[in-house]
Length: 246
Length: 222
Length: 154
Image (tube, rainbow over the protein chains, first blue to last red):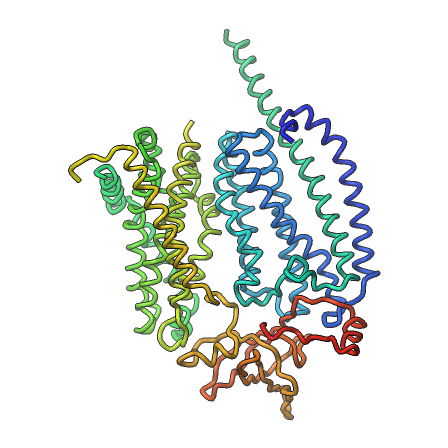
């Protein structure tokens, strides 16, 4: 793992991994969407509205997974000064922001027919909205600071403190009575979803996972190259200024 | 200890004089209340009912507009660099800044909320819970504000950015604070759990913010 | 303070203060645990209140079996009872019910408590539980007699 800190090795490996992951994501999305929208049964209570679950639930999982990964990366960058850690935290943030937005949007679309309301200020919905703003704040701070090494450290502080929201989101439905129902899959006593619905859910979850890693690797490479360009430009400026005014 | 109180006294003197941080926050706070009262119009009963949460939300904005000033003046005249370089425990210096911020912004807002409660027709029994909840909640607002200011201290124009950074951390404060403020006699509800959680949040911030903000200040320096 | 503390002493005092504050805060949270930010009251919580709340509140629970009655009249007014296994609250509502509304279903009702203890609802939201299954499976389970009604804890 620490071998990947070597940029050349990371670039060589990621060049081969990205197409594989992207292809897997496409295949799994096709299979998961077909299974979820066509082949799986309607719910005994919710009817066909339940199919929004296959888009909504994996997006929400990824929103939490992504922030957790960012917090771990930030801590790693903080403690071990691992060169890829800062970059991977930053690269994951926009992806996490989109997943969180998707979870919120699909949740609203699901809430209207089932709950009879677009939005409710219960603990789960509110804490996920807070997560959205944590992502937004992280990205805004990153963009505002010119010196990227300094930005990484300051963003890491905010990211780690914001991590407290992740367990609050996860357990909000157990700690407090909320309109949102409790966990169906990762819960004591096993999933409370029929296997015919669990299969497309897992297919979609895997598809999201591969999509995330493909996007993450691409974003890491971009960020790395962006920094290299910035370094080269600074070098060029220095060389030019020496040439002009010796 | 002498150094600790000296920082507080210095910040307080700067805050209360003309051009300091206290007055903009108070005026902004009052203006929001004024705008809401005028926008709602003649329905004084509606205004009275939403008065406490309205005062809470507006007080929060009053704190947000003050973030910019916490380290900005120190940064411009170079005293921030000296503070950082000479602090044996930078976290304690940060704590002193936070206490000064609360005394110069949080406490005046709390007291002003009591006065502005008259303008929105708050019921007599609602003043106590409102002022108590603000007294417990505004220290947390001040502490988080100092963190936001520390993280953005190296930036030229950080006002909106700092607000964006701290706003997510203000959600629990406003949820529990407004819950206490709303639970006057007649609501039939007991606000003790909310009060305890709000106090706990303030205490946690009392630990986390000085440490995190001290790191941020050192990182912000070259 | 006459004697200046050494750096080590200050550090030790600071760590002790941090631990003390953390312990105090944790204690406060543990004391407060309960349903302090509940999205809704349950009927038994509502009954336990000293005085009925004046504000608009939310009430959560299950629609009691056999309690739904549409009043005959020119407009659709419905009466039903919300229960949580220990207590019940009467609710009346005028408006559009969610599709999922039925007896035994979890609901969250927003409204005002009338002097007679009845909740006059402004809005009715359906709360569904965490089980998902096809209709055939639900019916098969009912036939086999292993069907469990959605848990009474809303």
